[in-house]
Image (cartoon, rainbow, N blue to C red; front, side, top):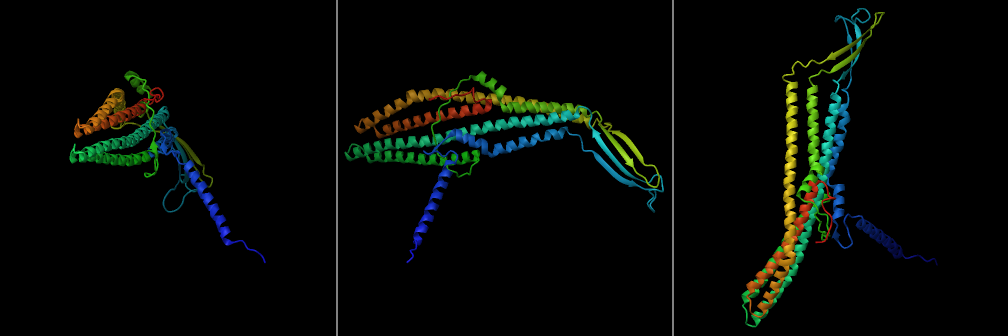
Length: 439
């Protein structure tokens, strides 16, 4: 009797294969997901790299630069030649070609040649416009890097505040326990218990607000780096504090030398200067050369011609003069825009530099003085409250002061890093501006 393999064993084998394929596919997807780290943390450098590849704003700017580069050769090219063909007849009753001397076919080819110097000036204008767009593309790239950093720091501080709030909820629970013990022993009132519970619930409210901030910041960060708005993001690790090695004068000089925004405005000025020269060239005529051939039949001689035509700028008062004035006005505007950009960047440098300096001083005060003292003050108040020497409101206010001080410290930490990120974008030089140090 011939044995037959059970059907369920084949199904089991197929099922195992499907499971294996699904497992390998999942592992492949995880390993190729940007910023997907085994411990669920978020990496800043990987986020920046992803933004440089996928940022919609950066991709649009790149396309504009590419398109602008194609205009240079077009600007320098000669106008298209013109080919003319036709027929000339004598009278309207019949075709007279071959019988009348003025009846003939007509073919001609003409080409306009611009006055010497015009083509090179047109190419220079297009080239300077392209260089301006390239510099602005660099400025956008630096701004996106700064934006990613700032959103990363905002995300970090939101998670950090939640950690602080959770820790302080435990301390409020200690006050609540002490108040409950005092109330049970008749030493305190029920109002003290309710007061401690209210403060604890207010911290839970703040925690929910921080969670909402995390959701909003993640959406903005996904938008900047070119992801779907609801793509999951891990928790940011603590960013190492950047060292700050330049003074105000060095920052201003670095911005003047390296800022892509200033370089873009300088290229716009150079393009405007080329347009002024081009407007001056418009007073000179262009030349159009043409060659014609006129065939005849029945033994009549064919005809040919060579002609040259020039435009006469007799309306220069209303055309060339006004064009030159327009070009000069645009040049003046470009120079003023360059000066305005320099003033604006100098103001931004001063503002962010002062923020870094203030944050350094405040962080030192918070870390070395205020936080240790307020924590010690709270411990003494808690001990005094447990023994009945201090009121509940005093103990709670000391704990709230500790909470505020800790959150202020980390707030200054983040504001310092964000200010340095903005300075990097403004000056266009990230190497000489910051290093890394623990703080």
